[in-house]
Image (cartoon, rainbow, N blue to C red; front, top):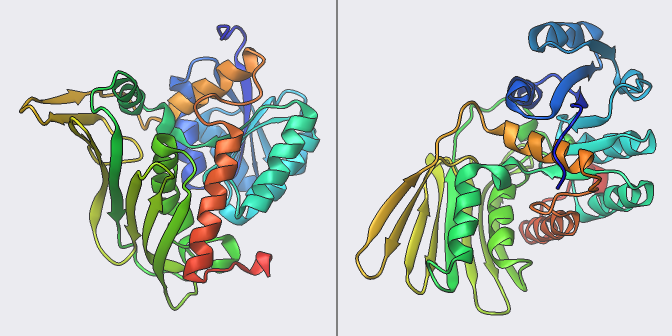
Length: 331
């Protein structure tokens, strides 16, 4: 891939927690510069722009789409808005990074992908975990055959946020629930290791707000590989993973979504902890990937290809079908 020359000019949709975390990482990302931010409330956009050094504050997404200076748009809005906003950005000729989950369901994801390909524009699910140094090193170790054939993965995590009816986690109309918010990481991990599952078994509990608060999932491949996954809003456990293969295991230290260490334990008795620290939050690595892809003329990332994002959404759809979670926009 060619090196980045002129920085890619970035626009951010949204001013919430994810938008702030991503904007804070942009100065650490090679080949990217924050140009604009859009919010429904202009005063929020102005405050965000002043804090993070954006050249423009836009009172609404339409103003950003009219700006020829914006090349790439990072969508950090609630889940239910991802599809519509991505389609609008692509129609306007902008490249897009869309925060996870990529969409509400596979139908929406397919529409997003089809339009990006028709427009020959870059589109990427912002699954930042794929680009974290420890995860890059993990893939290298597996490719080197350190564990031999990996046939079992156990992964999960649990956290207990205080109930707030206005929090997107507890709102069906925004695509809330623990599966799309945190469980998507686990399904993406399983996909990265084993590909699309042949069989899905899931159980879960819906809370009083109507979204899932507690899920357990078994994904099985045609080759017999299995991923045991759990995610919960009703308990506390740092998110981590254990990969088990013919020659031993690798523990992915918490937090699973941005690990800084791996412990390789071989059946022969050898054990090594590999530490791969990095500065900041880690969002800069996916930002760099997007910039390199765009300047290199690529319309998708090889580490998070669009067909895989679509397959992951299909797996999430099947899990939701089995736990009877339907969102209002799907009815």
